[in-house]
Amino acid sequence: EGRHREFDMEGFEARAVQHELDHLDGLLFLDRLVSRRRDLFRRKTYK
Image (cartoon, rainbow, N blue to C red):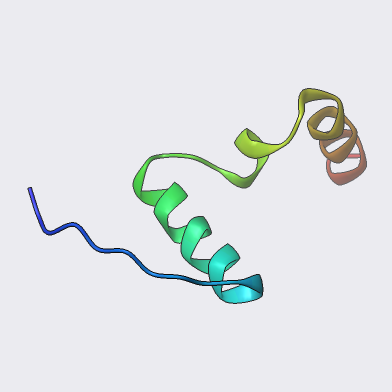
C-alpha cells in the first residue's frame, strides 16, 4: 500500500535516493555491478 510519488532528481541526490530504495528492496551496491567489475572490486577489496 502507500501513495505513488514521483520526483525528478539528478546527480548525487538521485544516486543517494536510489541507494536507499535499493536497501528497501534488499539490494547491495555489488548487486548492481556487472559481474566482471564486481569480481575485480571484490579481489581488490578483500586482498
